[in-house]
Image (tube, rainbow, N blue to C red; front, top):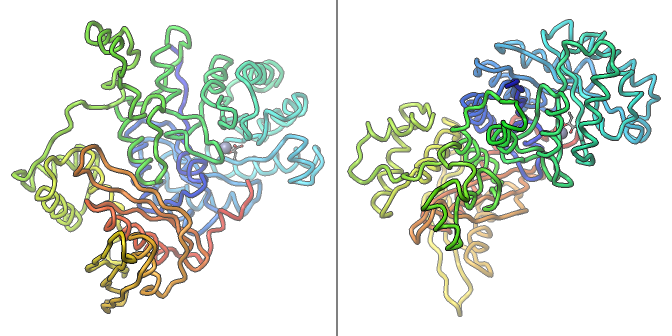
Amino acid sequence: MARVNVFDTTLRDGEQSAGVNLNRLEKIEIAKQLERLGVDIMEAGFPASSQEDFQSVKEIAETVRNCSVTGLARSFKSDIDAAWEALKGGAYPRLHVFLATSPIHMTHKLKKTPEEVVQIAVESVAYAKERFPVVQWSAEDATRSDYDFLVHIIEKVIDAGADVINLPDTVGYTTPDEYAKLFKHVKENVPNIEGVILSAHCHDDLGMAVSNSLSAIEAGAGQIEGTINGIGERAGNAALEEVSVALEIRKDRYQHETGLVLKEIKRTSDLVSKLTGMQVPGNKAVVGRNAFAHESGIHQDGVLKEATTYEIITPNMVGIESNNLVLGKHSGRHAFKQKAQSFGFELSDAKLKEAFDTFKNLTGKKKEVTDDDLFAILTDKQTEHEDVPKYELKAFQVQYGSINRPTATILLTRPDGKEIEKASTGEGSVEAIYNTLDELLEEEVHLQDYQLNSIGKGRDALAEVYVQLTVNDRTTSGRGSAQDVLEASAQAFLNAVNRTLYMSQPSDLKKEVQL
Ligand code: KIV
Ligand code: ZN
């Protein structure tokens, strides 16, 4: 079995998904879980893109010790310098620098000749190599680049010091056979390729990102890049959980393995989905709600007689526990703390106490408190900023009837500690709440998106609401969970507004940088 490295870019390419806006604490929580999952390399962000991103990358590099933390840089000295400052405290620092090589990108985006592109690429790799022990160079839009030009530029950047060469399918254009051909061509024609790792980075615009990644492995890629749940720019990236489980289940064919701890897949998927607000479709391979549900009588009968009749992956392999009913109203603080630790949470005493109080409160209202509920409570608490002034919901009331216009009355504490109260109406109850909050807040707020989900099953399931807002022209997102849909809606709105209070930059440069 040959070993293939896993390069996770959930926090960089994944975070570029439309509507995703993770804060520093959320990124750190995901990074810690990726470390538990056993990724070899994690791309923590794009340090030059914003002060916010720089700080998160730096903190992740200093926190994560068991895998290499990398950051993205354009071929500018200033980007490479910013990346070095953010990553130098890491256990195994490495840089990911890129430049486009396709005629379309060179002509229209870069407005450079191929010779100029070679020169810039070589200079950036040489400059990076003076700082970083490991440098990865990516030929952006490799799959629409000229083969001879690719061979030429790759030879030059390897001479300049590149250790890993990535051939991204930036626009999700290639097919499995074509992508394999590209890897073979580079392997056979670049004279100094020996000892250099080739990497595959696939986007899913035509739904082939996972197949293309597997095909690249067969053709000699020693590293695969992707994201958890396949999130990412446009249609997303290759889903790492799918690639790794495919390698495991079909090792007879691929003869390659990753170092991932497959049992951590479900938890990682849940965490990423919860913090990004990007729901995993029910029928999604490996981690979808229905991925292990057998509906037809014939299938159920087969599975009861012998599971392998219709089940090629066991839920257990990816960390799905069938018995997840755990704590109840008689559970004490100690059992709660142990449960939190088994999830991998390391909460401060103050946060643990608050999470325990929320749990206790819930046991009074809900028949069964499941792992999903606890995971939601603990994640919310863990990713909450401590000691930062914010808006807090003190009390609210909604009057709704099929004849009258819904009215919401809300009492809030402002960041300066002052209490404020107002009432307003709307066409529906949620709109009445949001109109009232609009009147109470000083910020100029516009709602862009609203999503409502239930955590787990049953009538008494917790409601989870995600919102995307613009607050003073800045895009942000927030989430709230509560047993009541209206309370979760109000909490999500305030959570999104509060997040803008701790952002240090007036605007998020990352969204302005065209990759
Ligand atoms: O898709 C892509 O080309 C990228 C590069 C920055 C590697 O994400
Ligand atoms: Zn990408």
